Amino acid sequence: MIDRNLARGLFLTAIALVFGLGALRYPIGDLSRAGAGLFPLMMSGLLLLIAVATIVRSRFVASARFEFHKANIALLLGSLCAFALVSRLLNMTAGIVAMVFISAFAGSARYSIARNLKVSVGLFLVALAFQKLLGLSLNLY
Image 1 (cartoon, rainbow, N blue to C red):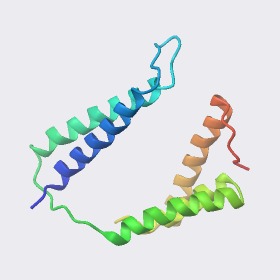
Image 2: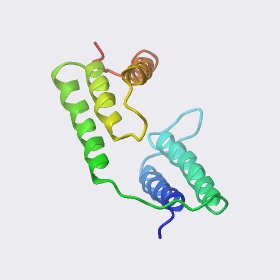
Image 3: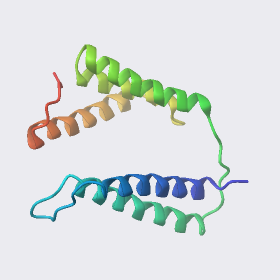
Image 4: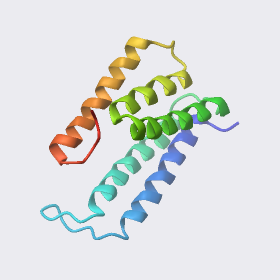
């Protein structure tokens, strides 16, 4: 039996290493003059720390069975496709709402419209911060 917690940690490790090694192809710079590779390298480093903590934790908690749900993967991929399509046709805010409402069907908790609206508002605020504070050109409204 494959331990779900250990598999989660190993998967996060793989993602962190792929993005971290990819970031090394770009100039890193330093903290006063950041290069293009500094941010992805820092994020992959943080993800690697979380992955190591997850692997260590998997040794101390009860083993959980690893289950593979194809329908949930299809729902998540469909929600990402809906986000891209709705964002292109309408705007990014509508795309965020579509993504959240579709991906919520993959969750194990009871489906809640109120929770989905709260998550949508939170993601909209993050996107708005990226637009206003970082100057990204996002079609939010």
